[in-house]
Image (tube, rainbow, N blue to C red):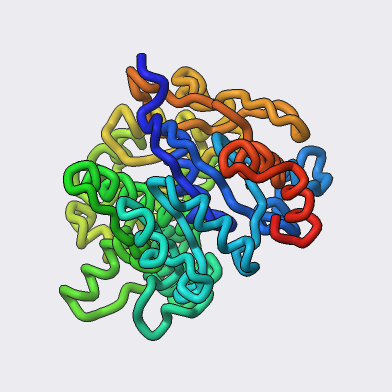
Length: 401
């Protein structure tokens, strides 16, 4: 068994928060050696976001940061200084992939953009992850995750509402889903460029737009508008959606006739379901106000698992809404070893999500926990780049690292 799928691939990550670090994490999890660059003062902003053990904030114990940065080396560096730029170029001279998420033009102003670095490293692949890409009128605009969803059609019908809600404010998905999606796209593009370089010997610059990553995922509303010229509202015309049951909630999606027939069987074939006007999808949509309360009444009399098994038995797409605790204790991911314990020197030992794939020859490994701020400065700067420990002290004292 080989050590790892990307053994020998070298990655330099100059990113903050989610999308870029997640791209770096995916490559590091596959075995690439990834060096994460953080600002000398404070580091990655993710360090200041929870959850924290016992709800006590600590820059080295953020579960958010720890998850996004497992399997990476960590150094501190300020490329805005002359010495910092020189060190950045040294680091980039012998790497395969650079991931950066700076505002377009920032890397050029610092003299560490793709053109400058490729001049000394022709095989270099630079992955730039920004809200709107490197070009266009909004290229230099900042964008938070909430804004990102509202400029990518992901808040129109991303959720199926429990009740008809025309005119209500849009609701974004929770967490940083769009950022993670962008990180996945960046990693896929980086792998494709790495494969192309193996064939041609040439590196390239990759421009990843977070907005376009989400636009590419939101196929329903965009295609509906392109075909019919109209925008969908949050009004739910399907039977189902979010439904309350004895011990929580379940989500039911049922647009097709055979799924309605399965639901009728799951509900015990009640007489009211046989009305002629309920026989077609269009008919059910037109009579949703009559049907929906009856389906919700049925759901309210059962537990999540009862609904799930009845639906599965009859081919109905229904799923229980599981809490984080439910998922962690669910036998399915546990049986596959999806959660594995990683020991961190300050945060301690916790279960971490691993990878969404199982590779028979090069399985996922927790080679190292997320780095402490500047943890590998000596290893990288002294042992690899040849700086003395005295020079390292001066670099720290002057704010370069």
